[in-house]
Length: 322
Image (cartoon, rainbow, N blue to C red; front, side, top):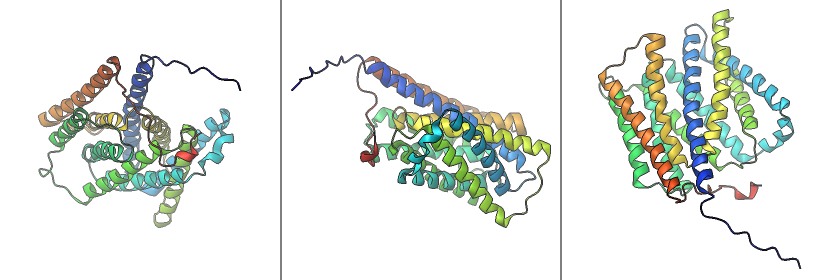
């Protein structure tokens, strides 16, 4: 029998891929927060006249058509049967729940407040990564997550402006989104990101159509149609980048960079609605940015020292991985 001589693996080779994977996850997460925020801004503008279900349906339909064209152009439609996987269904449920509860609250409260409360997601994802995927979440990572959340608390100052039922709905959305991200991590890596984006957009559009059964839809004006169309583009980009973020790097690291959404939300509130941030908001924003920069510095330092930075994620259904 022909014997194959084992290949010698040099210890220095994994360093760059490890840090590169972390950097891809971080970059994708920051990009996702930006495009999702732009999507939310356009949705909120359109909601001044259009009902929520109609916005969700039109936006989801346009996103579905856009992503479908890309999927077909790249020949990925041949891989659509891979979507018949139970974890894909669970991910869709997480996406629908997160979208519904967040938008119900978002249309009834300031954009900054909604985004700030939503920043409980990194804590949930980090805890889930430690429990379900056995990621080594050391005290430095927990500290970075905690400091980032402290920045959120400084900005929102809970108790000063009240915490109504819409704030509770945002927290319900947080649970769904954290669940969605954890399921995304556990999914077979062979399922194309764009295929997941397609099924997600189509499912959200279907949810909007069902909501429309209890609403009185109106014909969108050109401006509103442009707002919803723009939102569909940003939404599609958000789906893609968020999936990439969950598939690269340690989740406990990537999750920290969700906090940058607060900075984007404060900036959007000022530029679009004229909400001037006070001193506490500015200080909290700098704390959030500082926590993210420290996390990036720490991961780069670990990679340079040659210690393993990213462990292979434990699969909930490892038999399906190719």
